[in-house]
Length: 217
Image 1 (spheres, rainbow, N blue to C red):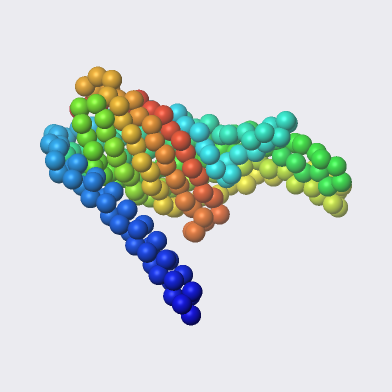
Image 2 (image 1 turned 180 degrees about the vertical axis):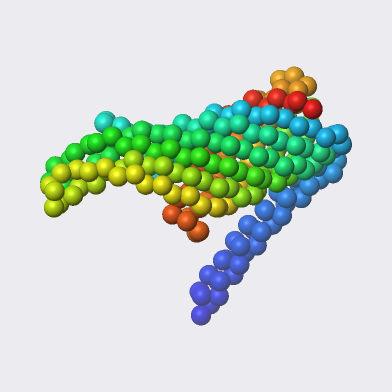
């Protein structure tokens, strides 16, 4: 009984430490945000982006067996004021890969998948300085995927291909870091996730992005 009580106490103590750590981090971000002076002017920027899809939803394998990451291209429009803003992004993600459809022996055939993402997010900017910016983003996304896939037909005893099209709404969240080059140009890098798993069969995607943020207003 004493041993079980010690285990429960240790679990509660560990849980309390995690809560304290999270609260401390949030308080630190809030204190940094309160201590600084935000730009109260409306700022509008265009952000072209290049990225890599790190998920399994849009990838295949090379002939060597290595992962074949999908590349993405996108363009965003952001409007910011003080410590908040909104972000809209269109992204296209395309990948060609080799798919193993062999039954008795390994048979690699080419496949392809193209995805389109339309994303709208709310931006929270806890840290903004002359040279550095940190932003948290959350919102919704709509995706359309077009896949050319292969399957083995036992009746015809041959490999056939078919076209799959999926679409649906999902949730989106991410984090962006910005480093100023000039007053109106920033280099950005960020991580974002698009989750359609709960509502559709589109999948879940994880993107690592690099961009050039150009202020136009």
